[in-house]
Image (cartoon, rainbow, N blue to C red; front, side):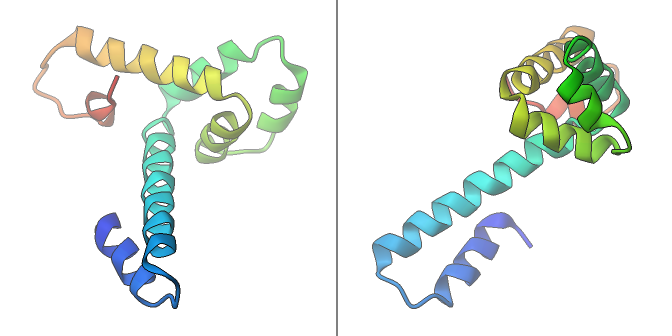
Length: 112
């Protein structure tokens, strides 16, 4: 189900003023966008960049122990937002610099 349809469906079930429903729908759309960004960085390249960016950060390295790629990306998004954005931009630049190789990858969909 597309996120916009999901938001409309959820908000239609709420008994709230129209302004509050609109605010909730906007928040849900932002939440969906954030989760999409995290999902795009749940790959080996991004996780390696996260580890490099946190090489001297014992809290981050401890948090990474026992977590899979998805959990690491979500943790970095939440706890180290600047690192997340830096990795996002770096991988987007790499994807753009490689040009059209005939392969469609998730990295080619990351926006700058």
